[in-house]
Length: 183
Image (cartoon, rainbow, N blue to C red; front, side, top):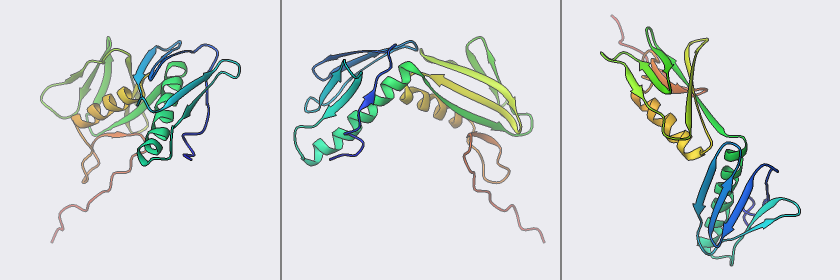
């Protein structure tokens, strides 16, 4: 049995869960998410204990794979609409800046023009001065969307291996290379 798949998902009081066959809609204070799971997976909401459980029909390889994935996606939906998710990025480099204008994120990262990134619905940006450059926080209730937006921001100027300049995730280790060997 899947160790992740068999764990119950606690549902906070301020979160509503609606199950229609394999389609699940979760609504909370941060927002609303919906997802259609494989029809073979059985999703059960226990009103008494306020927990969600996922059951699989057999020990088939595909059912085992779906079991843990279904539970993980459901848990991310519940956590997202109740607490939310965030990713922090660091902007390092001489003259590199990040600021929020209105809702848009404006990056000055060595190009001849500032790069403006508009947030999709459900995403917020924060930018502040950190110990080694600027820190950008991407916040939202959809874990997949938060991760994708953070990856798109990092793609604007990925960290380079010689000086370490660029945009990286907080805590990301960039392997440095030696420069030219002088004579």
